[in-house]
Image 1: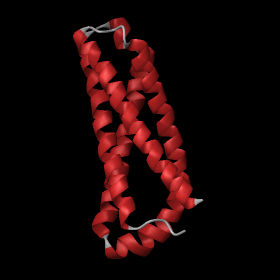
Image 2: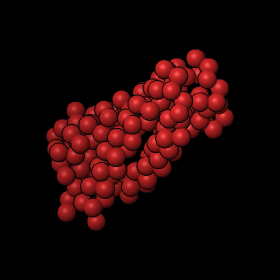
Image 3: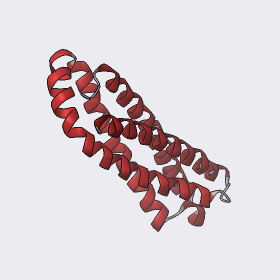
Length: 153
């Protein structure tokens, strides 16, 4: 079961990264006045919010086994650098969560396609691009840490 959850966690994380990159690409069209893509961009944003929530839940299921059998039994003792990398990944994902929530709130209360203000569009695209970059780095770190010591099966 742990292996299935770990693989699911990784796959959903990769899917989340792809969705956030697509959302950033679609929202970048706002900078050039391309607001016809707003429904598709909003769909990617909502999908990203759902995937983040699902992956958070799967991560919560995997974490107890990781904490005891991987982190405590191996990484903290033999590879503290990798253990710290995992902590950095978690902090990056906290920032991703904050940016996705901010994007969802902006989309709900001040959608760029409706208001068309340059400052709002710049903020929206910046948050969108930032969340995509951060989640890609977090996924890379997660995959790296998973290669050092797998879950006991």
